[in-house]
Image (cartoon, rainbow, N blue to C red; front, side, top):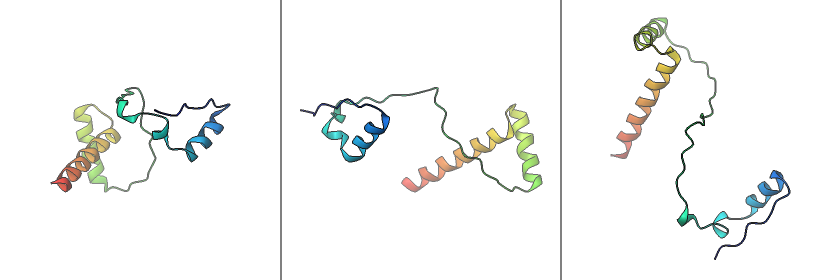
Length: 91
């Protein structure tokens, strides 16, 4: 039997409670269901990346052919390579 979750006056009080207590004492995680939030966008961080001009020109050309922004194409290429590397490391 799970313990009842107390009522909280505000988010700070709730945050302090969960910092000191294990949620497994209050929730049956075996009954949890996966949820998808399709409209949430992942947090992004701006970085500075130096590329040779010829490489950037080629990326822009490829992006233009696909009718997408070149920054988006760079992210696609990076994600594909990251996925490939992680897949390789699991074998």
